[in-house]
Length: 249
Image (spheres, rainbow, N blue to C red):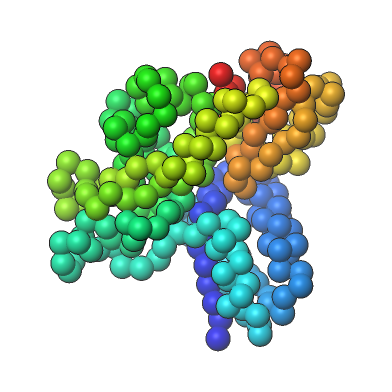
């Protein structure tokens, strides 16, 4: 019997860029499943999340491995009907941690896409002083960045059809604070890891970075050396990279 998993990694580019991203994803999945008896196919949902269908003797193991590696978009009922608790939590278990992609931010907090809209209000961000926009700037957050959250069991503004309310997961806050404590970073979206590395090299800054850390399929973190100024790196590589770039400050 075939197994399927929806990966919590969004593909939002088009044309050749989409094909390159899918090729990169196929390579990553192939590497993870190389020791298993499982074949796979990838399709994109309308919202950009990839569905991976697996077949073979190890299909169940492969599915669980991909869900653990890439995180999973829950596909159970959306909670539009049923008891009050299910309506408030939808496909999510309040005791579990999930991943959504950062779609937007405003004075009311962050909006994540986890297959359904999830709203993280300012009181549940808990990343220090400042409004959501200031937090985005300070931590170098970019659109579509995968972020971990836990639902609170409420709907936004009490609307039964509104977004699910969530808090950033402790692990997510720890990750972002670690970014600030460590070496300088530049966060990038709309580019694969290999594209970012090639751009840094083309701009003559290979010696100014430690590595390019993969955050998602199209979201990367350039880890700078101690002597590298992240805003200066952005100024230098920005002309080569049609992407959103932010420095962690």
